[in-house]
Amino acid sequence: MISRDDMLELTRRMTLARSSIDRIAGAYYDEEGYVDGTFNTHFLKLEAPERGRHIKIAKDILFSETNVALKDYRIPAAAKKPGSLWQLLDGIKESGLKNDAFLDILYELIGETYHPGSPYAFLVFHGRYDVPQKGTDKEWLEGSEEVYEYLICALCPLSGDYEAGSPEFGFLYPAFRDRSSDERYVNIFEANPQQPHTRLMQLLIEHR
Image (cartoon, rainbow, N blue to C red):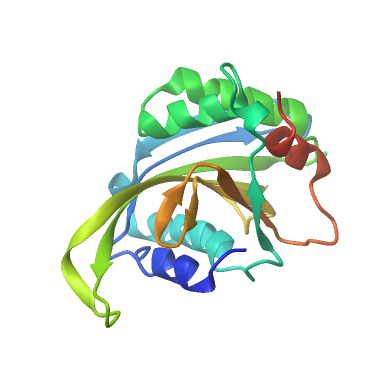
């Protein structure tokens, strides 16, 4: 189960003034599912309005209704083998989105899996959050317990000139559980849980 407090803690660190997101990359797909363009940049290099729009997309995933729209999934041990999607995501995370070859492989996998018949964007956020210590009285203390390094991926419809709309599907990896990183789990978001993105779910949870 996902703790609402954990998600609120992360989203509080996602503002224009102070954001734990440090880099963003993404691909734009045409109606047939082919990549129509990509980008990769330091998050603070974006103009403030664009940063604000992208922060909203990331927060829409984490701030959604926990255990309804955003659910906790254990990653099958067999899915972590060499050459797997999860090894790829680990490489993307550890490179801080600075390995375009890894990202291109991910974009290709998404394009092969998802064909909505209309243009869409697949965005990848990378962040590092210094998890502050809490005392026994639950008051914040100086210093951090760990640095939580994470990816937020968001699939959004496109409108206008490459402008991503509200996310329809996405995930947080690794999961943030008990105020700590847990690579055994992924938190998956469905804007409409009644109409799940079945093939994308299979890619994440059943990929071999």
